[in-house]
Length: 455
Image 1 (tube, rainbow, N blue to C red):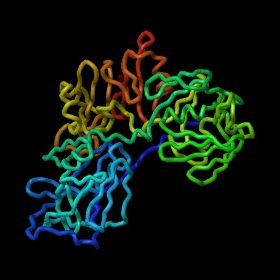
Image 2 (cartoon, one colour):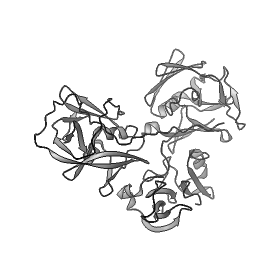
Image 3 (cartoon, rainbow, N blue to C red):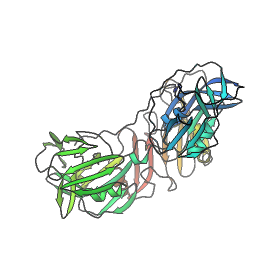
Image 4 (cartoon, helix red, strand yellow):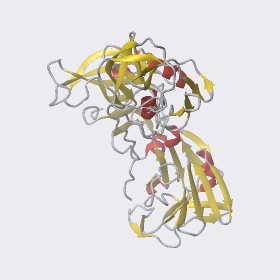
């Protein structure tokens, strides 16, 4: 059984020069005649463990950014929104909950001081007129980041001195992240850390783990229907049609054929040739599909149910996964500690330098309380260069108290069996471990290759 790839979201945005929705060819928007000076500044916006460099403009001691720039950066998070320009009435339309799509316009902006003209373009959010006010610079509309955050419901922590800003509550979209453990022969499942009851049991047959399609789809918030020997599910924006007894699968209108080899659901980890028995079936009036049925053809993680890790020794599979679960909801590996939530940081005591990174010019600083320890890399002095890009970043997290938990809901004092159901052998790509004490979880550690492996 080979390891399945974790679907990774890689957003690379270096200096975003997008408009806020004003069509450059439609500049009939009216402006006040008197302008003000806008000073160009380089801003770093942090979202989860990603950093994005972008130009902003300082106007009357407040800084303004492109609305479309923020929409692009947040497009795969829970705070995503679309931006559209309505030329008929010269208004900007914001639609929440929709992924951002570029309009093909890409004008380069000057990094020098500019004349900023107050814009009177109306800005609507979900059809409601807002009171947002912005400036037009070289034909582009800029808004204050705090105003955007208030409107869209995300929290932003701005360090004016370093010109760094962190979005605190725009997690990667939970519709594209979940954890579901299924056990053959059991109606009980573990969904995002909670025990739930399924209407039908999974089972193993012909070295294949079969998933009850309707029960799992509806548990994940999708829609299920059955007609003409075909089961249709709509999940996370993807429509998949499974034909009973057939290797043909239709995804968003395109037909695929399941063929070649597959992993055998056995401890031998042997690959076997796909035969007629490896197909959707009806058993006890319930439609079942093999786990990872279409994984080798197309990869719609968490949409077509084709993203599972198999554990034949426990007769179970763990479906799904999260794009970023490398810590708690408050702090994750590689986060910039200084830009974390003030409420969270206020819970921690600075215990000073506790170690150093072998062979590198970094010390390790500890922030902790009775339930959690957060370890941060700091350059030893200003004469050293941040060659690893880790100055001020979290390099290890150790959870010791029940008041803190992982993204999958695991916390100290849970049983080791529940830890196994939640994580199996761990999380691919990072250091994740827990210590057992008398059948219970004693502590949970997230570590980087820099630090934390000793806990």
